[in-house]
Image (cartoon, rainbow, N blue to C red):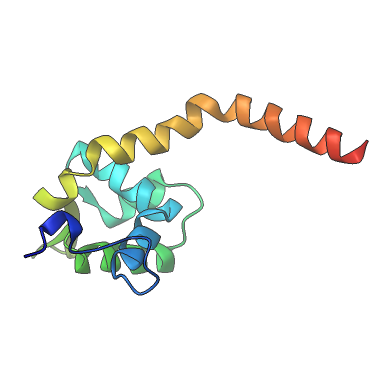
Length: 125
């Protein structure tokens, strides 16, 4: 009997985990998941908070994350209708990983830019 840990192999080209990794490695998905750690957020608030994301991409990404069981959508019968998104318990299991990954970029951007300059200068020589 195969253990759950070995049921999937991310190194196999046809493994379904590749699709999930592709989704989680998407910058918009990471930013949405990171923002939802603070609790339920309305669609327009997400759009204002995540600069540069279009309404279409936000909607598509939220639907994919909802389909994957990471985000839940709640509709409230107000005028106009209010829609809030929040992390599911499964989505919450990603909090530490998502936060570490997203904020690693902030903490290390200067070092990455310096490495890029050094690489580019070495290539130009």
